[in-house]
Amino acid sequence: MKQDMIVILDLGSHENTTIARCIRDLGVYSEIKPHDITVDELNTLANVKGIIINGGPNNIIDGQEIDVVSELYTAGYPILAFEHRLAQVDNRTYPANEDELKDILSDFVFNECHAEKNWNMKNFINDQVEIIRNQVGDKKVLLALSGGVDSSVVAALLVKAIGKQLYCVHVNHGLRKGESEDVVEVFQNQLDANLVYVDATERFLTKLENVADPEQKRKIIGAEFIRVFEEEARKLDGIEFLAQGTIYPDIIESGTKTAKMVKSHHNVGGLPEDLQFELVEPLFQLFKDEVRACGVELGLPYEMVYRQPFPGPGLGVRCLGAITRDRLEAVRESDAILRDEFAKAGLDKKVWQYFTVVPDFKSVGVKNNARSYDYPVIIRAVNTVDAMTATIEQIDWSILMKITDRILAEVPHVNRVCYDMSPKPCATIEWE
Image (cartoon, one colour):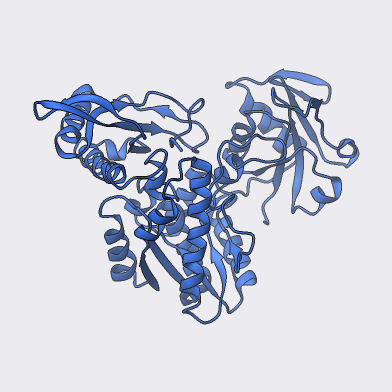
């Protein structure tokens, strides 16, 4: 990383990502690090211009109040300390609210730290191209290409850096209706990428049989992904690297020494210990909106960059509890209806993420003039900038009623439709 950096030390605050994003919006790179980072570890980071120590309500571990390493205070870096929404700079105290935070950070970053405004996607891409070439050399790289935003941007970056040394594998492990066909059409037929298509739906269903715990499901899916890639890699000569679309919220939500884990991500916590590849993760520093900006800078089509987000583990985490074929099919068909009606209403360009989930319980209803005992479908539609917080989209009642009527009429084994009104936090965007 050639850009200047402000390091945020995590003392349990929920506002770490808010501060990090605010600094990046100022045009300076920022990164969250564990509270107990040492001076030597800090000195190994490139171009650190200042430190922010961010306290909060979760700064207690095993009954002990935590603090940063004391030597940091005399290490020569400018320091800004936040505690209980107060900022202290040179013995001056400021109220750190939604109105004044940016001004405080701007003063610290530019006047105290003398950082340069050099964080942008063009510089990021140039850095990553150089890093990828140095890491990979003349070897081949295997990429899981789902067709989603993250994997598509990774593919574009790798093509720019190493060209035909990249081999893309698209694994159908339970995707949305028609999605695999779209991926093959775009990447193989239109973009002429090295693409291998693997239909592993039955394989994943077998591995996930009777598994209800969402964390276990994610880890099984993550490990099985790697096994599929290993099998495909053995068919190719010289594959030594595995590329992933890991992004910064994946790292943060999977937990640090201080921050509590929200949920593990299959590409962070689910990798097997005996992994046979070296990882290439060029997007791990980026928030979701930055990934899209990177895709635009790389020249990817608008439709691809702003494609509806989709969880890496697939529909398995939207078929709540132990996966069954009838509920998985209900998720796939109801999701297709939701996407179709949102597109007709123009909501596909307004709402950041929308999908359906089917829980592992039934309720009594009436269908076809007879008693039914079937599953509910839950609709979720949220808006967010960085996937760390999310608000609920207020859908017009007539649109919701049309979606409900179609789902009840067209999707088997369903007799009830609900709308999820829970923001993040307290809920997460996905249900599992």
